[in-house]
Length: 111
Image 1 (cartoon, one colour):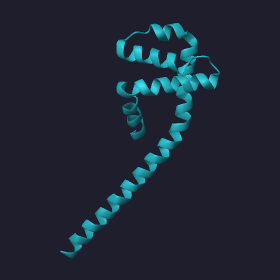
Image 2 (cartoon, rainbow, N blue to C red):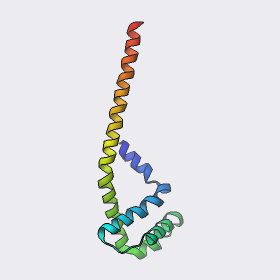
Image 3 (cartoon, helix red, strand yellow):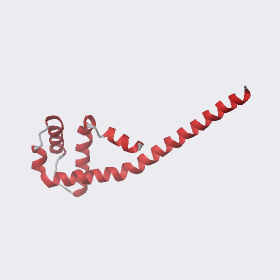
Image 4 (cartoon, helix red, strand yellow):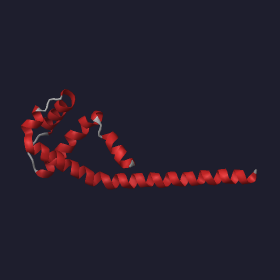
């Protein structure tokens, strides 16, 4: 749940202007496409800020395929990294809670 919430917050509109062009560019390179980073960036910016979908429509299926390929690649890389990080944080938090509980129990027994 934490990873899903964090992922949602990371890809909100303020950050999408940075994430989407990179995601599309990575997917385009993976697929061997011919889209330039500048055209991807311009189309993404126009769509996100002006609601202008013309750039995306002109790029057509090449852009859509690159978007999904890039998303799958990022997910394949980031899912294990996020899992390991969140698991580490949860385990550490639980250990901290146990230590606090032990200290409070010890203080109660002494009184």
